[in-house]
Every structure is written in C-alpha cells, then in structure tokens.
Amino acid sequence: MYMKKELISALLSTTIAVNACATSVSSKTMESEEPKEKTIVEMALNITSLVKEYIESNPFYFNPQIEEYNFGYLKKDSNILGIKQDEVIDTIKKYQKVTVINEIDNYYYVQTEDSTLGLISKENIEILPDLFVEVDISDQMVYLYKNNELVIASPCVTGMNNKHDTRIGYFSIKYKQTNTYLTGPGYRSYVNYWMPFDGGIGLHDADGWRKTYGGEIYLKNGSHGCVNTPGVAVKEIFNTVSKGTRVLVHK
Image (cartoon, rainbow, N blue to C red):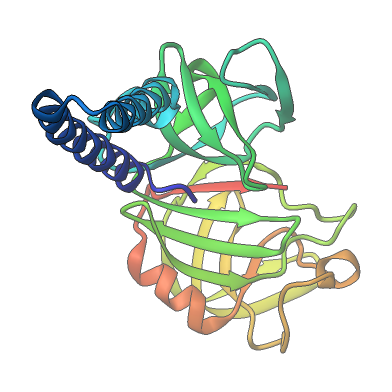
C-alpha cells in the first residue's frame, strides 16, 4: 500500500532542500560568476521543477486534507480507469471492497484487492463505516475492521457451493445471541455465539462439528448458508460488533 502522507512529505522535503541548495549555490555564483556553479544551479532548479511536476500530477496530492484511507464497496459492476480517464484498466464486480485513497473530481482514486490502482466513479462506491465485517467467499475468510484497521482475520466455511450458497450483499447484524440452538431441515446445532445478518443466515462458531476451516471445504462440505467461524475468532467478533454493524459479503 502506498503511504500518501509520507510520500508527499518526502517530496516536499526534497523540494525545500533543493530550493535551499539552489539559493545557496546561486548566491555563490553571483559572487564568483563561475560557469561550473551556474550549471549546478540549473541542475538544482531542474530537479525542483521535476518534483513539483510530479506532485501536481500525482493523484495522492490532489487533496492533501485527507488524513487517512477509507474502505468502500462497489454498488454495481464498475470500470476502473487510468488517471487520464481515457483507459479502462479493469472491471470490478459489485460488492468488491476497495481502498479509497483520494478524491479527484467525480472519482475516487482506489486500490483494488489485487492491488490495481485507478479511478472509479464516486456514484458507484459507498464508503464503509469505521466498523464492519467482511466475508470473502472466494478466499473463505472473514475479517473485522475497526477504525479502518484490520483487527481480526480468520478462515471460515460458508454455504455449500451450488447448494446452500451464502448470498453476497451488504447486510446488517440483526441481533446477537449466546448459547442457542440453530435448527433447520435435518439439523439442530448448538452454538455459543450467533449473529444473524441475512434472514436466517449469520456468523457463528462451529467448533462442535468442525475441526478445520478455510480452503475448499465449502465446495463439498459447506454450511447451510451460514458463515462457520472458529470459536476464538467469532468470540472476538461478537464482543466487538453490535446490532446494526454492517456485513459485506462478496466473492
């Protein structure tokens, strides 16, 4: 991940230093009027010009008031464009999470999960709150973000592929419950922590019947749609979230 504030600070420091150098050398040049020192001044001023040109053209510098990054998700399939807005770099699927680095006119400058950098129309992105849960079905991982920082990352098992698929979307936790039974056709399972977010689908521990999580388990031995999560991880999630905490589920 690029660090905008550090990059700008470094570039500005370089500019100040080079300007100081140019001023100092220029003063000496006026006294000695030696052609060699005049060449050094020209080089210094050229470097300063290049740094300023980079800063002015770099999207990290368009809005230096932005203090930190935000996360957002795609409300619809969207093209990600190059800086000049005349080149489609890639197409990002609905509900994918992106890191919003900056704002440029009607676009957000973002980094995708595969590290692609580019512009996406603001109207296609919703900024995620400071606290949210992310479920990545493709990677079989569940994440908890707080204050834009990743605080929990755990393997999980989602709904069995092509039979009980966990629905993608942007949801909210309906309520929290401990020490309860989840029931359905052919099963009645005791769980310590239960957080439904999509009807009868939710996050819960599954250590009572699962020994491993993640990988390709969900393809043949997935859940009935819920997000099975190791007890130690789901306990921490349970103690951090509350009713209404948003849950982003994507592939």
